[in-house]
Length: 258
Ligand code: SF4
Image (cartoon, rainbow, N blue to C red):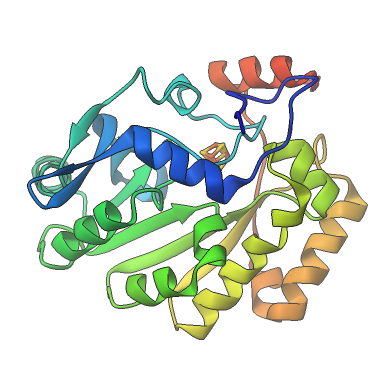
């Protein structure tokens, strides 16, 4: 099976769990008993009132509204391999330099490279500088394997932000490129997080230009079926005109008014 770099008018939908494995083969490698992962840079971002951000390479979805750098589409071309120690060092160094006590992995999907992520989280637990680790995820791998969520649940500093991509299987496939039969994995991830007592909330790109009111209603209903609190506290996002986003929208043939 081949995978599209980004959604184009005649792309073939794909298995996002399989794509996660293929991407892991590119962006992760074993080094001295540990697992490294590719990152392009480390910086402090203004979101969450300041957070040290490790910008990772690679994702298992191809959302056309994605703002992530082009390294998402060409993981073999970008980034350098960093061991978990290097990531936690960057959190400590940048965190103390800028007086910031939150950390995250962004720009791609952090759950790709399970051993790497768990080792980073282990180091974060022991790091005085970091009080909160915000794990932003599309939820696919957490939905596919509850044991992964069980392992993440052991870390007290972790707070998860699950970014749900659509309200129906058809719209999920249209927006992410992943086959519609995998739509449910996002909601299974939410159930697994609830079962394991992990702190989290749900976010979604509900911009009316790419989510109809009916789709939004279906999404809210689905969340409320799991837990009414999740629907009431949904974080709603709009598409922003980043350069990478504009490129992906154009390739997908989606025109938005700005
Ligand atoms: S929006 Fe998130 S899940 Fe979607 S392609 Fe970009 S990084 Fe991946």
